[in-house]
Every structure is written in structure tokens, then in C-alpha cells.
Length: 361
Image (cartoon, rainbow, N blue to C red; front, side, top):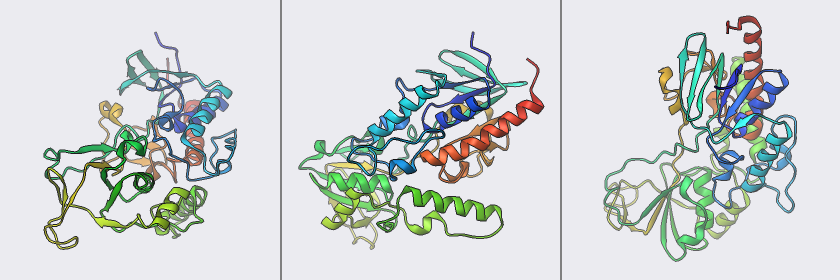
């Protein structure tokens, strides 16, 4: 028998904890269900050298600033994970783990959240499962034929395993640039992107990106226009990427057309007719999609690949809020500070609707 609650939060990473903070302040009964064994969210599972794009003072969850990390302007993933662990304890958030959610379904006056530890029923559900569990790997001819190693961003930990090897890094975003930067110190690397990589100015970090995204969202709601984050570029020039640039290794080739037994090949003239690049390993840093399998029982329409929302509230299931998945759930909502700023209005909406629409037990 599960405890009676007003809200079930699915996911105990940064977005789920931000929601928990505001739910606690609102005096609501809630539970946070996290599939992981330990606190820290996806920050526990990133590669060893992963860092925030912003200094600690610009990366807080609500109520408590992230402590600075000695000797590091951009905090490491371990530092962020410890902050999330301590944050959870500081506010005594009711996180249950490991609890894996199998599905969220309509159960009449409430939503039912089915898990491997029973079923919770609640008037509202907050989905905050992020994207880390759902990496995207493009399907290309020859994938099964390639005799080397293929891995994704989520599988990468450190460059040492690639020492002395030939490595192709695929992707034009921050993960690809950071992984390329350190693998290139021990291996022969080739960088491949679908379009020429766009580097942000050296003085732009996550704080600037969030401010730009916030102004853009405010302008959109006011019916005007403002510079978008994409206008600044795609890759934040954190120190390892700047150093790799200075070594001359951040030049990208166009996307290849197929894999061969021994490498990758281009069929078009952009990279040279019949050009082939031998390699021992391919690291696919080709993005993520929202982890939303648990919402399948609700059968939500996804006209652009994701559920329709107004702010964070689902259009087709108004008892559901989605937090932390990207700009479609709020400006920079996949960042620490962005998760905080989107969780606040989401919880305010839930609290007001509970006050005026509370269903019968």
C-alpha cells in the first residue's frame, strides 16, 4: 500500500529535486520516484572529465547556492552530483529509490503510477526523467559490417582506452567537442559533423546562454523578437575545447554516408568521391531524445516528436507537467538554473488547481 500523495514526481535528478523543493514549500504531499540507486541524477553517469558550462555561483537549484569547487571555475560532474545529494538531504525530500516506473495511466479522478514497488495514485504527476537514458544513434548503411568498436556518449568514460587508436567522433554539439578534445590527446582523431561546427565566443558560458534564452522566451510571449541562443553558436568554449582548438584538432569533416568493415566512407563529392577513412572506433555523440516511455499508457499525441505543452503542462493531459527536457518545457530547462525557474510556476499551477479542483478521495 503506497502513501496518499497529491503529486508523484517521476525522476530524482535536478528537475525532480527542483520540483520537490517547491512542492515542500507549498505544503503538498508528494513523493519523488527515482530509478537510480544513488542520488546525483545523470551527473553520476557522465564521463570522468565532464564539467558544467557555468561557474557554481550561476548554477543553483532553488533555495541553496551550489558551493564553489576548490581550484575549479567550472565544477566537475562529481561535484555537481554531490551537490544534488546534499541538496536532497538538506530539504529532506521524500525520494524513493531505486523505484522504476513502468507506466503512468488514467485512473479516473487520479493518475496511476505503476512501478516495481507498487502503484501510486495522485491528482497530478510531474515527469522529470530527462534525456540521458535515450541517446540517438543514426542508422547508416554498413553499421553491422563495421568490425571496430562503436559507443555512444553515455558509454564514454575516459580517453585512455583509445590510446594509440584511430577514432572517429560524430556530432556537432558540446559532448562531441569535449570528448574529441580529450581523446585527441591520446589517439588519432577525425571529427565528423552534419554541418560545420559553430563555436561560441570564448567569454560565453551557461549563464549567458540562460539569460539569452530567457529574453527570447519573454520576447516571444510579448509578440516581439530577440536573439536566440542558436545565434551564438552550438559549442561552449570550455577550457579543454579551447586548448584543442589551439592544437588544431577541432576541424570537422562532413558526415560520412556509410560504414565499411574497416572505417567510414563518403560517396559524395563534398569529402572527395569514394573517400574512405579507416578507424578502430566510432563515438556517436549524436544527441538524445526525451525519456518518456513511462507516459505511453496515456497515448499523448506527439505532433513534433514530443507531447504538446503550454509551459510545462501537457495540453492533452492537464494533470501532467513535464520538467527539464529542453526548451519546449521552458527556457534552458535542461540546465540546473533553468530547471529551478520552470519548476516554480509548474508547482504553483498544481497548488492552485488542487485548492480549487481537489478531487474526492
